[in-house]
Length: 326
Ligand code: CP
Ligand code: NVA
Image 1 (spheres, rainbow, N blue to C red):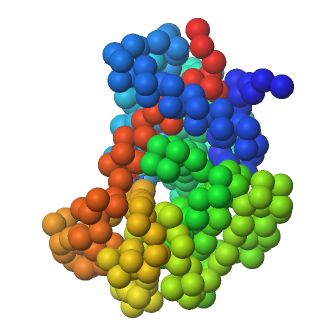
Image 2: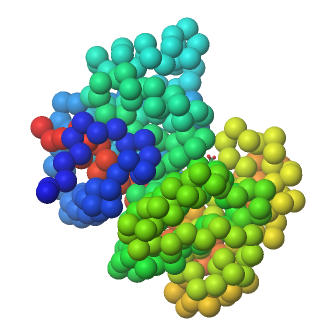
Image 3: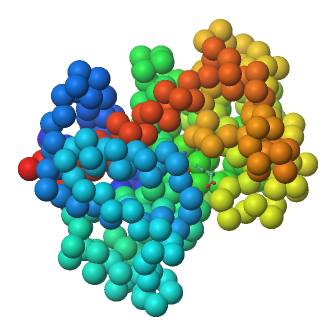
């Protein structure tokens, strides 16, 4: 049966079949080719989309804005101090108001329940642009980047190294499992992902031929990995834990020794960004945390800016697929 995602929310990849994820990746790849050819299909002509941001963003915000404009839609940025959400007005009421005016709503913020509540009451597609629990639009960009590099996803060994229970680790496990990949979460035991989620991912793997390993053994975790992936050691909202995390996660830094320990010649390094890889930002100067060395970040193994660009094409695919064309 042909995949049709019109009217669907995009809250977590748990809700999507491998065929539906494949459809979104193929659509993103096609939209990317059209953009490169200078063709603007304007699939979303006349539509308006709301972009709610409780947390800061460079890539996600810009990807939604540029994707909307490329497709002829109007994007409206609603920052945390711009609207009444959660202060003078409930999420449920805000959802019903925005749903009467906009064709789709993006939410980035803290509680995953907020994006679920928006989706429940808006009556239009709601897209999760990152919550404390999940970051599904990022995973589409990651999968597209991996596929562009290796020509396939199935059977690729993927090692995520660092904070094993943050939004990235949670979402990557699901995305890799759905696409039949060999996923390893490599982190200290105290940062292992929730058992319930690992069990769910194991069930997905039974269907897709993928596999999941959770380990604190770095050498075991990265050996044979085609992809090394990391993220910041303290996510947005957890900044006060940075010093403790540095102590805990320093051995898990992605450096050339780790790249060599994969034993692969064509290792791919990915990071959702923003990344601490040198002391050139105010925050990295202050905290000194480095989940990846400058050497790896700037090496031939790194495709982090292809990955960042792919946020645009994949977010565009999510909007076009769920809103439908004119
Ligand atoms: N990767 C990502 O979501 O980046 P931003 O926080 O800049 O949106
Ligand atoms: N885990 C990070 C991802 C940023 C894109 C955070 O939530 O801050």
